[in-house]
Image: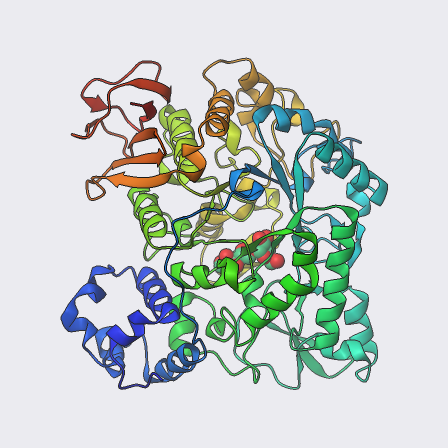
Length: 621
Ligand code: ISL
Ligand code: CA
């Protein structure tokens, strides 16, 4: 049992404690080394408030101690053996259906549009598709607000279209996973409507109604509570005010979800990406969030649900009741989960999830998505070194999704480096150990959109924040801040050709796209030997041809040298070597630099004794 008298060292020895301390340091922009100091480790927890100059307080310690005492499991030692499984070898590709391909000219991507492009995906070497939500929805958050879990959104097509898509995916030897949004449903879901109409109905307990709101805030701005006069009560929504949090402590709700999931598996889907799945279990009494933590993290209440009391129980039950009987693959979206808890969530013996998406590599210490900053790739390097050396046995490798700006723009917006960086990132993501997830357009090296006016943005998060910031900032400053982080950068139509609207639609797209598609589009890149797209195709083919790139051990070479990121993949007789320059300047090559055959490089000729800006090479020594 931990108490206020326990030392910082005791906390760091606890898996959840270690993850929480690391996350808080990241948020404060304080180096990890601070807590590596043995003297600091001997300090009692009660010294934390002083140590952090009041950024953490005594009340937080109570929450911390309660959280830690609630987790008695410890991750097992790594086995170093990787049981071959399809999803370890597969390359996943995330489709944002609204923006992928419009088949009928209404300006909105759809299922027949995806079907049209299956050959493109197959030629690229994609093995599995993840579809962002395609269920019936009022689209307050582009489908992450589900009105009917069993129906396809009319704009996207019909159930017949979905069956055809699934058949065609399978016919090509590919798999398909769905997005499962079960932390919350739309307020238009019949369950919620029934709960509003009749507080005595069984559905009433499917949501979190309270007579009084607590101080929790929504990720999309403002209070996390919405008032419903029908019941003279408030209901919890961690996201938009049309996304009502489900009450996972209600067994009848869980049973409904299990049945719904099994129905999709009966239809033949191969697995799921589980939206914010680590948020499903909330502290029973829904207590106020600690204000110090709220201020530090930007959200109040998070400590009461990011790793809630019954998280593991619910996941195990989901696995047993729904996923396991079908051998379904699962990857959890788990913001705020660190390395140690990731081990617990994905250990095969524990029967919860196959993989989790961590997020700490998408931010740099002390900054958030809406700050103006340059992303230092050395941060990505350190993140991967730590996760490969002491993380879950298998991890999800990704750097883009529908919730973040395009990273090339955040790393270095100089157009001269665009393709080099795109290929460098490709090499990192496809030659480290783990399952790679690409996001649509990443294979073309897409960059942020050149939005010029707030009226061009669509995302509920961006629009809410803009309104909020406008109260203290002028229009230009608020717009600039939104542009730093808006999720819409990743949500504009996929540029297929240099035609109007990138050939995405014959109509008017639901969100405009800038002029970039005139030069950067799939068709142009297919015809250009050294394009980003062809680099991806070659790299994916190499990954399939060399088991070392999948199952091989990873050995990092001179990990402490800044801007240099080098590693080996070793499997049986075969060793491959990756050499990268993470900076925009030439750097001296490693003493370990390999000789041999260059399998793939982002420059046309081999380097001499220096690596050029963002140079990245895969060697077979
Ligand atoms: O809240 C965050 C911190 O800013 C985010 O990381 C958040 O946890 C994450 O964006 C959750 O994303 C998922 O759930 C949302 C949805 O809007 C996103 O598109 C989805 O990926 C609500 O369903
Ligand atoms: Ca359409």
